[in-house]
Structure formats: C-alpha cells, structure tokens
Length: 455
Image 1: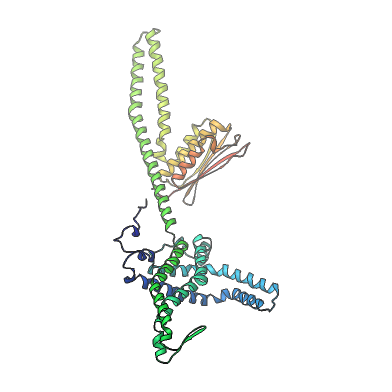
Image 2 (image 1 turned 90 degrees about the horizontal axis):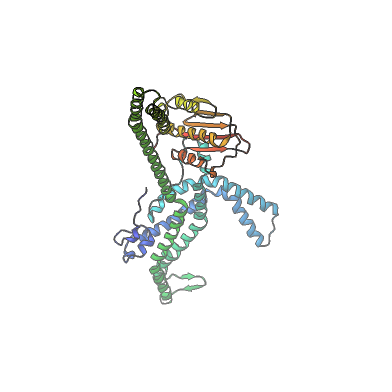
C-alpha cells in the first residue's frame, strides 16, 4: 500500500514546495520564490492570451453574443431569435471542440505549474491506437471535463487576475518610484485624473510605489499559490491514483489469502487422504479379519460386524469430505473432467456442456469449481428443481460459467443462500456474478472469471 509521507511544511529544514510554504519562511524575500511566482503569473497571461486567440473561431458566436448584448444596453435592438442562435451555436461549438483544446492545454499546464508546485499527475486512461477510440475515451472521462473547466478558468479568470496583479505590483510599482526621474527630464506623469509635472509633486507617487514594491512579492506569491491550488484541484489525479493503487494492493492481498487458503485446503486433503483415511482402512481390514476369526453367531461376531460397517461408513464419509475439499480429478484433468463428475454426484439431474480447449490457471479452475459446487448445492437445498444445466466456455480470455435450474426461483442473496459468498469469492479473482431468479423460475446464475494470472 502507499506509504504516508511527511508534508514538507511540517519539516522546517525541508525546502518549500509551494509559494505558501515559502511565505512562512523568514528568508522568503531573498529566495527565488517571488521571481518564480512572478514568472508563473506572467506566463499565465501569455498562455491565456495565446489560447484565447487560437480558440477565437470556436468562441466567435459567444463573443458576438456579448457584443450584441452590449449594443442592446446602448439602445440598439436585436431579434431574440438571433441572440438564441448565437447562444446555441456558441455553446455547441464550445462543448464539441473545447475538450479537444483542453487536453493539450492541461498537459502544458502540468508542465508550467512546476514553477510553483510539485508535479501533477494526469487522470487519463490509455487509449491505444485509433483517433476515434481516443476521442470516445477522452469525451467520456471525468478528467477531460475537469480540464475543460480549467481551460475556461484560465482564459476568463486567471489571465485577467494575473495581468492585474502583475501590472499593479510588478509594473506600476517601479513606474511610480521612478516618476521623479521622468518629470526631472521634462516629462509629465499622468494618472487619470491627475497630472504631475515636477519631481516634488511626484513624492506621493514614490511613497505609493514603495508600498506596492514591498507588497509585490507577497501579492504575487499568494496569487500564484491560489491559481496553482485550483489547478491542482482540477488537473491532478494524485488522490485517484493513490486510491487505485490501494485498491490494487487490497485485491492482490485478497488473492494471496485465497491462494494460501487453497494451499491449506490441499494440505488438509493430503493429510486426510494419506493419514486418517489410510488408518481407517487399515482398522477396517483388521476388524474384518477379527470378525472372520470370531465364532459365527456369537456376540463378538455381531459386535465386530457392527464396528466393521461403521468403519466403512466413516471411510465413505471421509472420502466425501476429502473430495469436497479439493477433488483430485480437478488437479489432474481440470474442469472438463471435474464438472461432469460433480454433476454425477448431484442429487438433482444435471446436464453439463463444457467447451474449454485448454487448461486454465489454477486459481480460475478452483474458483469455477467452487461456484459450480455451491450452485448445485443451493439448487438441491432451496430450488425444488427437477433439472439443472451447467455450462462452461471461454469468451475471449474470460471463463463463463452458467448454472440454470427449473426450480421455484426467488433466490435472494440477502437470505443466506451462499450467493453473497459466491460473489465475494469470484470478486477476489477479478470476476463478477449475475443472478436472475424471478418468482416461479427459472434461476440463472452466471459467473465471469478473467483468466489472467493471479496476484
């Protein structure tokens, strides 16, 4: 499972990873973080401007709608249908082509954000070959639409905010501080609605400029951090990736438990077969020999006969237990032989159809046999059926196992019929179970088990 790491901000000796962490360090003003933040905001302005220009054919109807609404405010009328057409066409173009633009822009932004933030992870799935497949997968991913939302924020909000902060603090501050030099050489400093023509008159401007210059590093860093935090919220798939990794590890852990369980089952089967069963057979033979030596019709002969019969019954029961733990035919010959043998031992008549051209992985065969055995057991105990069909075949790399009975139906996993245990067992190996059991029947249980290696 993924390991927890200590956040950099919790270790005062660790270098900061974001502007916000850098702001809390005493050497912030002497670090590169103000300049990195300024570079991030300046590149945001440039990126937003370029993207707005390149996407103007897509946004032209919406821009025209905005212009028409502005003209209406000024008193010029436009037909309602004209505005509706512009709105509908604009939204259609934006939704149709916006995600195509958002995907490469998001890739650029994940690279650019490393100026002020740790690396972000993409949430896209691999698409394989083919443009149509790429489009189909991308347009159905949540990650694509989060990137589309980020694209809108970048063009509409981030670009304007970044330009305002850069202009006010990084450009206007130096301009105001140097305003006495401009007036000293005969120039005039015009700040609507005021004009300043002498160095003395610009002293308030110098004071304001110094305030802006002192505040600039902090304002730039805070703005850069806020934008990067929103970018992380929309573009980073770190949480999903960690959850996916944990889920994979849990699945592997469950698979290892099943493998260990199967190993233990086989050990118990072997010990019973080679130990207790052989001892019981030896005991039965000895009792049989003693019975032959006993006087016919005597109490000893009758007692030994009873003990001999009970020993044979115990041996038969033990054989059934051993067979149920792990049938030898399954290990030796696989499902094509094990399923028909299982059907022959069922109390309800079973017709089998097994079409498996090759041996399957051990964990697949064990799981399929378990599902088949439990299904037939449930039919015998609960269904009231007169017949069962048991089918097994391969669909690509997936084993499909079906058990169909003509019983009363109405099977409910919540009623303790073992169906929940079947679903859990199949889920461990990455499979699924479907159950159809309307009242009156028939009941159809279908299990699909992928045939890739376990663990």
